[in-house]
Amino acid sequence: MLAMGIRVALIGTGNCGSLALRQLIEDTRFELAGVWVNSRLKVGRDAGELAGLDVTTDVAAVDDMTTIIAAKPDCAVYCAMGDVRPKEALADVRSLLEAGINVVGSSPGFLAYPWGVIPDRATERVENSARQGNASLFITGVDPGFVTDLLPLALAGTCQKIERIRTMEIADYATYDGATVMFDVMGFGRPISDDIGDLPFLYQPGMLSAAWGVAIRQLAAGLGIAVDEIRDSVEQEPAPEDFHVAVGTIRKGTVAAVRFQIEGLVDGEPVIVVEHITRLRGDLRPDWAQPAKEGGSYRVEVTGEPGYVMDISPTSRNGDHNYAAILAAAGRIVNAIPDVVMAAPGIRTTLDLPLVTGKGVFRQP
Image (cartoon, rainbow, N blue to C red; front, side):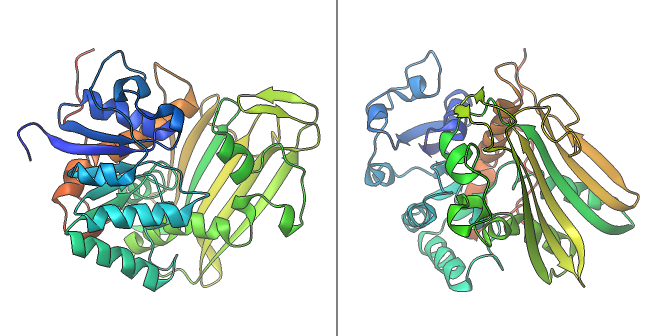
């Protein structure tokens, strides 16, 4: 490690990226080497301002990836949108790896555990880029992320027998302000339709299985089992009346709550299940599972001997449950940097990285 810390560039200053940037500025393990932004309105602004901090870093935001690569950081934190621009995100990541820059980040999500999820040739291209630059890559988050791999695997390590593992996100997204995710990806505020042409991005055929296939296949690999098939299903609930949320107005009759499920089957039985229940109002679909804490929580259920039900309720002094969940994703990403920099070249996962602990983040209140 360099005396002044690991030199890190931040790519993407949205909800997750701005919180990762805050830690990169404040955490003495790191030295900020650059910031890339997608918006021209952010170009030239100081990183401290973009992170919401009352500090000046003398690192100005740029919108040119070649400038970031030319700075030769040890690592790049990639938090640019990948859901609706997967090819562009993949190209960015490969360029960074080929330049010898390690990458940690939240996207593209399918690189969290691509084997069996995307074509083998696409995975091999990423591996080749990593070998060419002698660099490593780790993509993670909350869900898919530590709720779907780290936590269930930790519990599984205490069991003598496991029959099924279910992970859940149960959350009210009324305060979530990511318009692209809310409208284009998840389809809130859109008419309910079974027509493929009218379905939002996430509910197009195969998309849920691809997006959460990384979680199911990684967990299966950790358990030493082979998933025969992945299937998914979606339920949508209409708004009973017009009401307002952070991203705008949800009109009566349009999507206001969603429940989707992705199942990994072994011999025809669902053995690994990921379930999401997302409401824009707490009173919608009371028959669906409820969070452990008002607003939202995550749940890991292990059916076995012993069995477990573990509820995780992220909190923050600076925001609500949605903010805290994004903060957790950013923390998981940034805290992995030292181990990823030291890792062997290639795609790294929770299964082969050392346990990422809170080393370096303790501070007196």
